[in-house]
Amino acid sequence: MQANERARPLRVGVAGLGRLGRRHAQNLAYRVPGATLAAACSPLAEDLAWARDVLPETRPYRDYAELLADASVDAIWLVTPSALHAQQIVEALRAGKHVFCEKPLSLDVGECERVVAQARRFPGQQVTIGFMRRFDPSYHDAFAKVRAGAIGRPFLVRSQTCDLNDPDGFFVRFAPTSGGIFLDCTVHDIDVARWLLGKPRATRVFAAGAVALHEGLREFGDVDNGVAICEFEGGKLAMFYASRTMAHGNDTSSEVIGTAGALAIGRVPRANRVEIHDAHGVRSECTPTFFERFEEAFLAEAQAFVAAVRACQGGAAGTMDGSAQGATLEDALEATRIGSALRESLRTGQAVTL
Image (cartoon, rainbow, N blue to C red; front, side, top):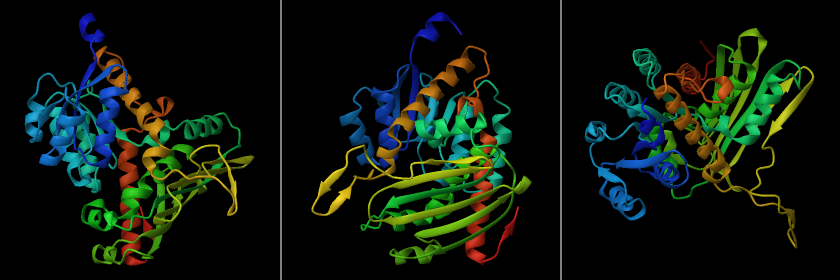
């Protein structure tokens, strides 16, 4: 890579400008040193109108193929529907782009395997899947403590993703393309569990669920509250809880238990360290959504992606492996494999052997 190429910002094109895509776009445009948001793509006129207002220096595209044809774009940032991820990653690689893609890699295990195989043909291009919890300071600190032997040998993870209830029914409208609660929500907890436990292979899962509030989910075989158990090789275990119906806000937490202690991450889902004392008692405010809870993690993962691409361009290994916090494509494949098995267990009421 020439010196002038190293000096200029990484030029990124975002595809998908929904609620999360807009957050990523603003981060890349204004908050990630070494990157610039060069282009934004959406088939929806209202999304492009938003981009013109908020991101005036960004070139708009309605068609993904046109974005890929833009030779000035170095990297593609995918925040599109999950069912599109696999093919869009492959197309971006073939167009010579580096790729960041929001989780999951795909809703289909076979498609995940296809992406992993295709990516091996492009070793000079960075591909990252957005498991941002690895970049959250608290999760990263817990991971470092586990690696250092602070709790002995870790053997059990309990982890949950619980979203603020949305009475307007967003999750019902999203259900046809979400892949279900385990592939949409618990996939983060699956990745965290494997990360903290040393990436063991899953051997058997069992899942159950209930519809507590959102009756429209039944039509799609989904639930708004789900629980699951995952058995791993070597006697390691994980317990998961996912919910769409929290009254108090986003409540994401994990616990890793070892032979000499335990670590709890985010057990009290507070927005800050302020305690309110009034006639209702003593309480703290909760983070309303995962945007606020993981705002710092979203920024850190973007910075890490830019650094990894720079390493690729400089001829060094640019992978975001375990030591660099990020999940590999193989990690993303395993998260989908386990999430799909949980979805099948929920459907059949039977344990699923992997």
